[in-house]
Image (cartoon, rainbow, N blue to C red; front, top):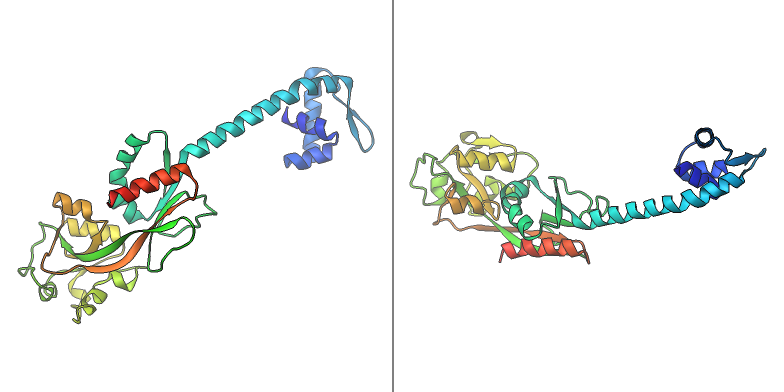
Length: 283
C-alpha cells in the first residue's frame, strides 16, 4: 500500500523508489504483486513513464487518504511518547549512590513521566544523544544554556564501623598508620590520598600499605565492608552516613572540591520538572 501511494503520487517508479529508499525493481515488483492480487491493472507502463489507469485512480482516491490518516496518527503517537519520555544521563556512581535510591519518589509524584536513565562515565554529547537532563561533575564552570551549579562536593575520610582501626582515629597523623583504600584508574589527582595529604602539608603513607581499587563504586563497597578507609564525600555518601553504614572523623575538616552541574533542556516542561525535583533534594 505504501509503495502504491508513493508511485501513484510520483507517477514515476524511479522517483517513488528514491522516496522510499528502495530500488526501482523493488517498486515495480511490489506494484505487479498488488495488481495480481487485485486482478486489475493500476498503472499503464510506457517506455520511460507510468500513469494511473482508471482503476488505479479510483484505488488511489480510496487508499491514499487512509494511509495519510494512519501516518498522521503514528506521528502523533510518537510525539506523545517522546514528550513523556525523559532522557537523563548521570555517572555510574551518581546513579548508584544518589539518584536510584530517590527515583521511586519522583515516579510516585510524576507517574506520567517515563525516565530513560542513561548511565555513563563518559560524558556523552548532550545534543547528539537527545539528552534532556544531565548531572556532571566538572572542574570548569558550565555556563552554556541549560546548565547551572547544583552542589559543591566536599571530601573527607570515611570508614565502616566494622573496620578494625589501629589508632584512635582522631587526627590526620592517625590516618598514616591505617589501611587506606587507594583509588586507581582514570580519576583526577584531587580524588586521591596523595593530594589530600599534600593539602595538609604531609607526605602520604606508602601505597603498598593500603588496598587498590579501580572504580569509585568498588572503593565505597570496600569501605562499607570494613576493608579500609576511603576518601569520598557529599553528596554520594550521604545515604550511608545517614544509616550508619559509614562514619566520618569529626576532628578532621572536610576538603572542598569542584561543583556538580545540572543540565535541563531549555523550555522542556518535563526536563524542568525533573531538574527542579533534583534541586529540591539539596535544599
